[in-house]
Length: 343
Image: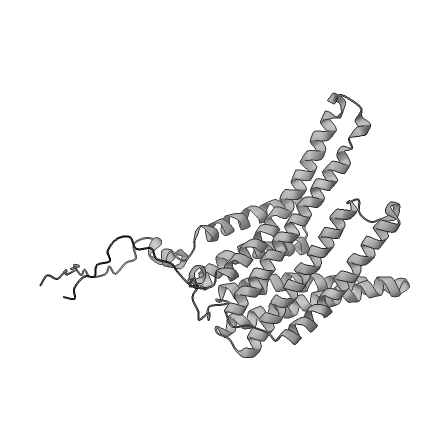
């Protein structure tokens, strides 16, 4: 009887770590290429936003803009934070990681779309004197506006896919809210956005000269529909986070941080609704409420992004029990099937 024996020489471990990799390496080991790309994109995104917003004017630093840019960087850094907090997320809960990656891509592509629009405007402005034919047959401003609107709709579609993926990932981790609660909360949170979109579409269709935007009506319709869908998916994520806290899912610290982020975002939506009511119904007293409401909205908007990043670092979704296994597999066997006799 033949046996295969694996031998390995056992050596005593060194007392001193072998350079910085001995301590930092195991910490960064869970990062995949998506995690490293998230870190690089965060650094680039924060640097570009700081430069465009000009947060430093002379000797004065606009700290509100600084914190807002850092909060946006938290969204881009979330995939790397989730991989560090939940090393097995790529095998056990791919939907959760994919949702954060899509939302990070939406945030990174926002300044890219603005840069492309301004670049196209400069190119058209420089080439207007060199074009041939009747210039009235082609309106470069309308074409650029249409393209910019399409990029905005594309970002909304990617954001919708990201929120839906987060819903699936949180459900796989055990946060499955009841259908009645989910529908009621979604209606409450999405109704103001839907009514605002309908009012904007009505104003654009009936009085195009007085419209607040220059985008074509079809782009506005598609964007409004996708925006309502993204709002509904985002509401489902908020409900799932709060349900996970109520169920006491593990790790509890991560779910509590995620629930706090959800509560902060719900407060932001409520304040936005209150601000709209103040502006439209109590216009003569709007100045007394505008600054406090905007300040509270800014603080909570920054806070929910930071709390969501902290929840990812704490291992949100790490309690996922089921692994992703295909429902069935087909094996093709050619020729005679032989079995090895037992030793």
